[in-house]
Image (tube, rainbow, N blue to C red; front, side, top):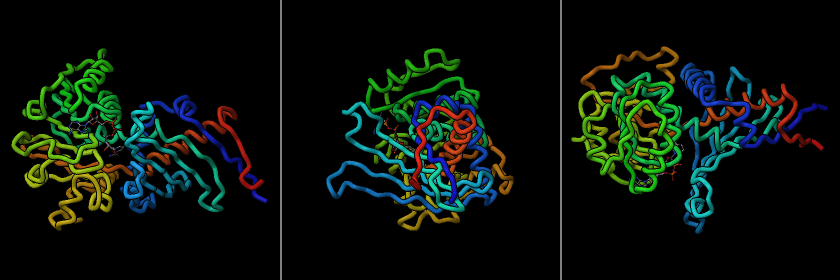
Amino acid sequence: MFEEKSLLIGNETVQKYMDIDGAIDIIAKTWEWFGDDKIIMPSKITTDMSSAGVAGWFNSMPCYISPLDIAGIKIVGGYDGNKKNNLPYIKANVVLTDPHTGLLKAVVSGDWISDYRTGAQPAIMIKHLAYKTDVVTIIGAGLQGYTSLACMSRLLDIKEVRIADLSSEAKKNFISKFSDAKFKMVDAPDNKTACEGSDVIITVTNADADLVRADWVKPGAMVITMGSFHEVEPEVVRQADIIAVDHIGQSLHRGNLKPMAESGEITAESFDVEIGKLLAHKTEYTPDKDKRIYAQIVGMGCPDVAIAETVRRKVLEEGKDSFEFNMQG
Ligand SMILES: NC(=O)c1ccc[n+]([C@@H]2O[C@H](COP(=O)([O-])OP(=O)(O)OC[C@H]3O[C@@H](n4cnc5c(N)ncnc54)[C@H](O)[C@@H]3O)[C@@H](O)[C@H]2O)c1
């Protein structure tokens, strides 16, 4: 009989064994493995519970990662009622299984992992694609906006950050968290002021709206949408010289590009860069001062599974900080 310890690993333990720089490195590596066809990852599927009266949805995001020989699934959702219960909008868990036997290896809290993996994504994408990062605009002063700037501040040379949000309180809160930053923090009065002249514009809200207009985006600028719904007017995508994504298949039925893909205006052939292929040196790209870039990041499950597996291995080495149980018993 196989002996396999199944571990339960909580969010504090994850943070004890993983830091932001470690997470960024694993995410970049996982994207590269994906671009190198070393990861099997079907597109995620969404269970939207709203028609049954539950104000939430969750995604099931399975994968097998060959270099780590681990199988797993990230289960992550957004829950509208969480704020009033003092919980974050996004909640995540990761389940790790032995790819050869199906035995459960661990259930790992996915909250910190998902938030920092989300933040690391624009940081890595911008580092490899953007021509300039002096002025960065973030529309959406929530948790994912915070982790995005926390990660960007580690990888990018930034002089000014403009923050826009419907909520003045959210903006104030956000700015106070970066009081020691080397860059200037600007509380933007509106999206137009936030975007005009900016080198990089990121939308990371739960809005379904035209937050950015094409005539606010200067030549050479990069616009990234990260929210779960449509966030910029279609002309922003149409006028882009380069379209980049994290995952081509998922980008055709999610996020900002969903309506344009459904109408047939955006197809798999519309994308110039899939970031993993660039990191695996299978795509060529040179930043250009005049070219506008549009990027959509919808998020993949494999980085979360890779971070969770790295944490599980460290916990096992130390032999503490987790609850063990026997699923066979
Ligand atoms: N792409 C990914 O990998 C990924 C991963 C996790 C979450 N998300 C998505 O990111 C988005 C933000 O998640 P979060 O955890 O930061 O949520 P959050 O609730 O912490 O923050 C969202 C912020 O958006 C602001 N906002 C809403 N509508 C707005 C509008 N019209 N104009 C300006 N600001 C507006 C809210 O005031 C709030 O401050 C969600 O859509 C979530 O599903 C994406």
